[in-house]
Image 1 (cartoon, one colour):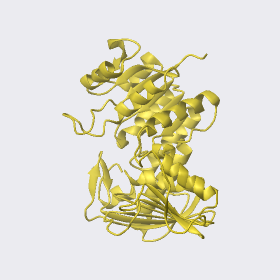
Image 2 (tube, rainbow, N blue to C red):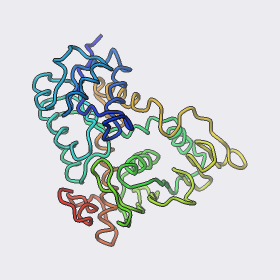
Image 3 (tube, helix red, strand yellow):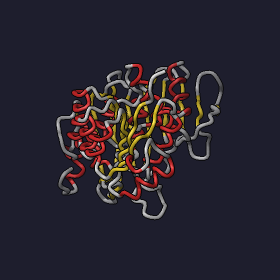
Image 4 (cartoon, rainbow, N blue to C red):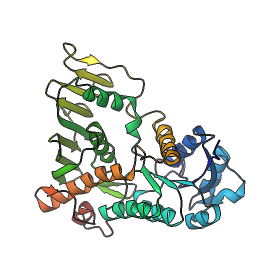
Amino acid sequence: MTDPLRVAIIGCGRRMKTEGATGCGMGHEHAKAYLAAAPDARIVAYCDIVEENARKYLDEYGGERGDAGIYTDYREMLRAERPDMVSVALWPHLHAPAVIACAEAGVRAVHCEKPMALNWGDAKRMAEACEKSGTQLSFNHQRRFGEPFRRAKAMVQAGEIGELLRLEASCGDLYDWGTHWFDMLLFYNDNTPVEWVIGQIELRGSRKIFGAPLEGQGISHFKFANDVHGLLVTGYQAGWGAQNRLVGTKGIIELDPPGGPRLRVLGKSADGWQEVPVKDSLHGPDFIDRAIRDAIDALKNGREPELSARRALQATELIFATYESSRRRGRVDLPLDVEDSPLAAMLGEAGG
């Protein structure tokens, strides 16, 4: 039996909608996932710029030692603790420096919250730093482990809707929520590379979440190398229908249609819409547990994790390519050749 991985958590935010909370408090979900992964993992340190937050995590989730496991500077923590694996549960603009510091410190694996970064350049730099150091890097697109999504993909692979033609999704924005749906459309199509993107965004109604600018409305149309097309629409959603829709030559699969079941199919094996029973909702529970278990197993067995940086980069490139298409007023052929966030630039913000 191998020794458990020594795990550290950077970002000990308070739970959403509790006193003093500034975000979702995703660090709690990461901590619970590592406890669920025992005996393969043991949390040895918590780090947060607010020491009280880290101490609350220690009280709730425990650790290897008492006060010795509490830090307010992650660079100091990395030097002192030399963890095998680190979860980064910070706001997006803080992801790149923290992940790169982990890579430079020789951390074996990093599991980071999504979206990857505020701009395309930082997303690539994180992946490059970890590839150089041999650090396994994954991002928390945890819906790949949800039963509705996996069943939908399995039905496509079984030919239930014939040849796949088009993948559709709708949500509130292209970035914070859209990163999940771009990733899921790639998941349904076996991570096939995308050749081009054409899109438009509306800045009226733009807002920020976790420090990141979001469009008021947006549309992204893209083509995979196997000629399947993708479509993601954001903002006003009246009449759009299901959150995800998979269209084939012989049928349709829908996830979370209005007033309908979580998953249904209009396929070749039956007349009319058929509900596909699933236990999971589209949001969980336990998706993050599964994601972190997979990351640990991948590290131990030398394979690519399901939520690898390579796959996260595909989804992230679609976000920034859509913004760039709006800025250029034309189609963007991939690979994307910008470093900034075109949305931040169009809003006149520095550092995007």
